[in-house]
Length: 365
Image (cartoon, rainbow, N blue to C red):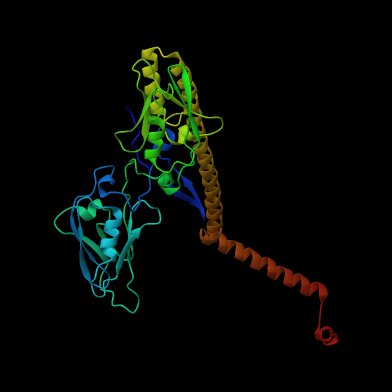
């Protein structure tokens, strides 16, 4: 099974004052569908770091006031267990507390040392003989609060629907499952966990109806898929009406390009005409989605080109202004001043001869 597991970060650059442009988009949003669950306090440490987990052990935290404490982490612990272990320390003047960071993708260590406290060093986290702190994403030191790196929890049956999409949550509706020429409607509205979604799909087996499919978590831990229990057919999951539930879950509707291509290959080999028909529609949707993404980056590229042209024009204008002031030809300027002085003196001489003024003319005024 092919599943996209590329980077999930974006790169933004400033193109002008208070203006930024995204240079990248996570590949999982274009080619696949990473459910991207946020870190939940109830997550087992074993589910973090793409399923690699966090080893049992201990680490040390030293606050900016120099007070140190050791934190043990037991096997089978949860994220909340680590947070509570730090926050419940009974160490006089220890100034560090733990919580989930604002992005809900890792931990946050907050040092409450104030200006009235003698601050002697940076907030520092060190290992106590293992790799526990590094696996928790908090190894290192900061002059202020320490924001941990992304812990990348995998999707499990206990993962909340509200925690998906980085904590933004997903709004589920109905999906159609086409298998062997028969279509079954599945209503996922209001389900709270991934486990409930899997159970709702797995219950669609004969004699209840003819869906005859199984929903399983994928090996990468970032989603799940629906497969036919009949080796001669290929299950196809579709959106219902204007809904996008199959797409956002990454199980159909063109939301996962690699899944579409893999399923289309299987359908062609099995000569499953109903699956081929449904997958061609999904393939078209995937192509439309990629075209939309290209258009988004085309707009961003045009913005950068326009700003670049404006900046180039500004550089030319400023260069001309600076040249007029700083790149003066001394000999030419001296000649111009001499010519102006000569013209001024000639004007005075002509005026004196024409007007023939005397002291009486000034007295009359």
